[in-house]
Image (cartoon, rainbow, N blue to C red; front, top):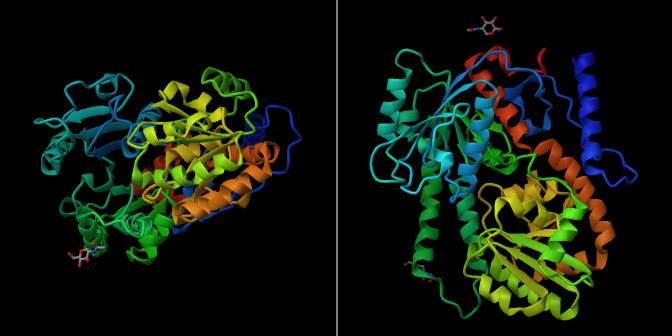
Length: 470
Ligand SMILES: *[C@@H]1O[C@H](CO)[C@@H](O)[C@H](O)[C@H]1NC(C)=O
Ligand SMILES: *[C@@H]1O[C@H](CO)[C@@H](O)[C@H](O)[C@H]1NC(C)=O
């Protein structure tokens, strides 16, 4: 049962979210999706733990000793999705008073501040040897030394950092899958379908596509060695249960989160950014894309679709944030495309706020692109590939944006819908996105969900929900 104080804090939270997303004083429509009311054992749920409220203001009932195995620990220059997740999550857990020990590869020689020990952050244990080289057995030895006199409560592996032969019979091991081979196989299929009629398949691609079938078979056989699995999207959770045949109670869906302090709606900031990059005042609609500008992120599709769109609608603009082989082609489009190169993290909020809609044409359904969550936190609707991961965890309501099949015609068709709809309606959609993102995709929500899972692994009492401190 929900206690009176829980209800009160829920109410306050909702008001706070409304305030964040509706700051420019517009009439507030009702919350489109109410928080699920769940009572029971958290191991039985198949929806994401992010859906549930966990109270941040209450300290955890006990301080856990947590071992983290991560092949990489981020330096400022390597903002990969998995590393960012590891850093955000484990810094937040350390800040909540848990004793976090990270076992990771030797740092690169030019390693920056993130790779150094801090008073309050996780305790880092680097392997010896050549930079970036991961040796699981050596990491395991370091772990055993560290646990000799004071055992760990829980072990967390970022993907296969703990190899399955070590994972067998470790009851307090939790692994987070940042992409599984079944998704990689889907990705290969989508990528090949974009190949033109006269275009040859690259031999290396042909080989990796064929091998991915065997990787799936392999994974289905060895995944069961891990005691607990975290799926980072609802659809991955479904695949782990329905295709990988893992027991329901060992599969937990926890979506990644992005720093809630760093992203949010700010109209003025967005307008200034438009001026700074020289966007004409006459711009009717501004579309943004970010990330690595490579083929498997879908840039051939966006390039083709936007080239056609711009011919029909000369006042529609595309802002491209990121670097990679496709940067030059976008630049060749002339005045309708603003190619910015890599945008530093401190400017991302301004970038998102300058847009009317954010597009993610990715052909890789592995994991979930954090950029979609960041754009939504800034109050922007999204246009994204119709993948089970995105459909199941991000664009869960038609109100949040538009989806297209991974081909240029389908993308162009949806872009036309966006143009026809216009910026006023898009801004309205954006408010719904912001509200949803602030509830589901914050780093704080992710950290609290993992904390609860780790407590539940330590002591079954904590698998119940809600508890006195929720
Ligand atoms: C992929 O490789 C297989 C086996 O080598 C070959 O039979 C097939 O023709 C190749 N497919 C394409 C589209 O190149
Ligand atoms: C689990 O936690 C509960 C509540 O704090 C406690 O009463 C119980 O003794 C704990 N069980 C174990 C095995 O530590």
